[in-house]
Length: 559
Image (cartoon, rainbow, N blue to C red):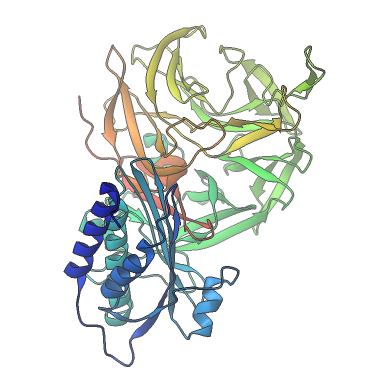
């Protein structure tokens, strides 16, 4: 039988990698035991014949530092971790390979059997089908190094050659992978930044700058961190990091090399969290936490939390507002709000058209009892508060708005709110969407995807502002309207060059996607760092895990 050329090439790569990786299996009786399960292969063609070769390659690589157990035909309904327990394994390897067209996406996870937590995660996107095998080789090598480092390294010293267990970024330079090994009882994450204004933040922290790696990644949180904000929640002059983890609002304090949990708040299992923001809007010296959420009936039921000395207390409930805290060029930190629409009759067919956002974005102020509406910002009627930020975008002393279109292209509006510039490149990228029954077909639901935030800030203290946002790459490349799968992400900084918004700084390319971010002078050195939540898929069950990442913003190009 003759295989098509692409299959033959695929097999050649597999054979070469397997031969290259051959080495004696670890004979140590105390070696860790790793159960390798067949990967799930998603493809229009039947590629199940490749699984044995893939498992051979992984077994050879991982066998350098562990005893390998292979399960060729596992029970599809059985939990992989339980299978590991039944076979007395210390770790379980699961994953999937997706081949579509000439592209390949590989997701794999090394799970610790005792805890059921992910010890190592891997997610890569390639431009050819053969890249999938290169990905498997990279993952197996990382697993081998991780197990070797856990066995040989001292508890507080990362092995020089070991891949950092909480880092899902194979491209990161070795020096930024030197993170502490995971501690069973603590989740390590970076200090939460304060407001993204250098002068204000520097005044609130100590004058001695603490060393900060170019890129620092926390140990993984099981599940999705969907939103992130920063602020001085307890009023002690040091910033906390606030994030939405599944249906909980969590506040963490950085204490040297670990996170100490300050507080947590259950936002309700029947609620869906849309966004989290933080800022001292009522002027009492501590930052309130603004949680925008929808109830089980798809209605706004936002809540405002504040630290009461021992925990988080709701100071405003049943709020029918979408909230967003932003830095206003004229007033400093302010709160914006927008109302949610209700279904309205459709003139054709008797169906209902749902308007998720009513026209008008307003400044909100606290009058001691409630949030009252102030000025309305000069913006198009279809603008939402999650799509824009205002500032001296052109560095000419005039306040403009930079925004995302519904398709994630950049737009700039003049001081009066009229369109002034339109970009063609697609940036941003957010998997969160609002859903409503279609106005044209009652059997389906329409999705309205939200956008990433913008932060307008002077990154290098030269008196000119830059615009920071996110670029998540969609594996579907926008061709599938209802589906988005982000496989890579990075932070970017832009500056107006009198012709367009030019990218002047690019962060590390990370695996997965960035769900939300903030800026702050984290270590008191007078410069802002990017703090963001990184989300990755584990592959086999599509369960997710998240990390907090702190990245220094390097030199800006095109100065």
